[in-house]
Length: 68
Image 1 (tube, rainbow, N blue to C red):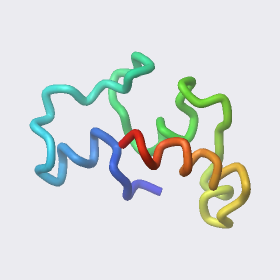
Image 2: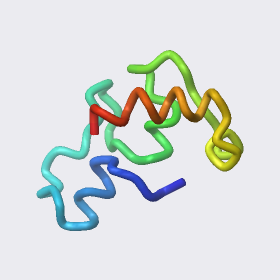
Image 3: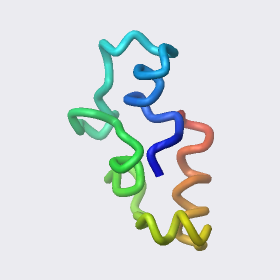
Image 4: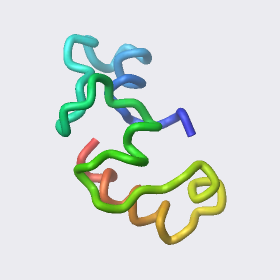
């Protein structure tokens, strides 16, 4: 669950400078775990949802797909 285009990961991988890791919702650091429960999207999902590719996980992934 920790592999994805969050600001935290992009900084760690050298694709961002690390100066702005905050999520647009105001959270201190935009991590993959945060994206599954970010208040910017009304749907949340769990690790189990992600592992089983549930409808909930697919909705969260679709929301973030064009924003990250």
